[in-house]
Amino acid sequence: MTFTFKYWFSAVREAVRSAMHSLWSHKLRSGLTLLSILIGVATMIILVSIIGGLDRKIASEFASLGT
Image 1 (cartoon, rainbow, N blue to C red):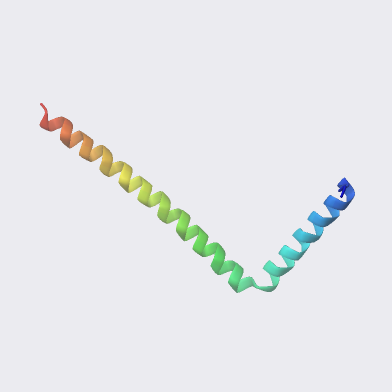
Image 2 (image 1 turned 180 degrees about the vertical axis):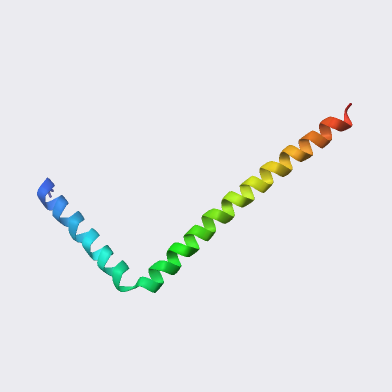
């Protein structure tokens, strides 16, 4: 089956239109999903920062024990 650009563009446009309609009609669910994604990303950034800081702190403590 050969897909032409016109058919592909039409299918993508219809998919985007359907997705936007679904997002718009379910505002609360969309908002809560967005909020949970933001909380998850922020949590991961905080955890990576804390672990990196602890790693540097432990490394400096071990380095000071050797002197």
